[in-house]
Length: 270
Image 1 (cartoon, helix red, strand yellow):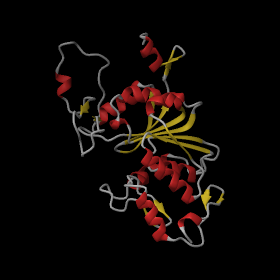
Image 2 (cartoon, helix red, strand yellow):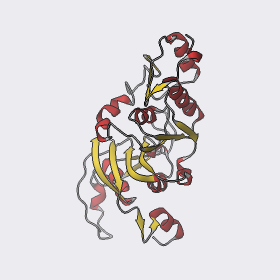
Image 3 (cartoon, helix red, strand yellow):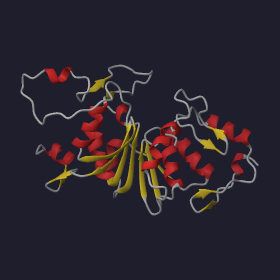
Image 4 (tube, one colour):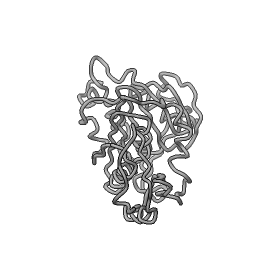
């Protein structure tokens, strides 16, 4: 059976396994879609078997999966920066009613659409920037913001937009550099207190002027203190920290006096 004739029927939310798979044809089509960053298992054919991070992002998902309910029946999911669709696929497999994946890269979107179609999973994919995520109608039970923050030139601006879409929980992941330790800090410090900035665990973001890991889109790399402080600053409460670079959050104070923090900032009244 050629790849074009793969069965796309489903049983519930799980793709029905076609009786025969032309794995050579499937592998050729995977190659034609360009280099993959997500290593997906498409009926035994890996999309990125030689990934420099190993079986990525499954190596992370093994630690994260337990903080997401195994049954997401009726839930809505927004996957921001969906890349090749790994997380979108996992959420749909858990029974989510609607999964919307967005990205700005056509290559990744084409890969994600192909993967979902091959596995027989109904997932929406749109080309959309994180900076316009607040234009998407409604809120979502789960918003995934995985591996995007450090690729943004304006990370906190984006995060403040993302929280507008969180109706339930936010699953957030970012690359961490510097200290992975945290400590309690005072609410205020004297102007001449410079010592706090010498502590490696003080919240900070490392700015990459040119390139990091051969990627010119790696702009800002936070330490753990900064990542958690930014989440709190955007009105989120951290409820779980399943692995060093990932947090589960719920909205607590994302609005003040009936307005979102972002809107107050842009209006000059924050």
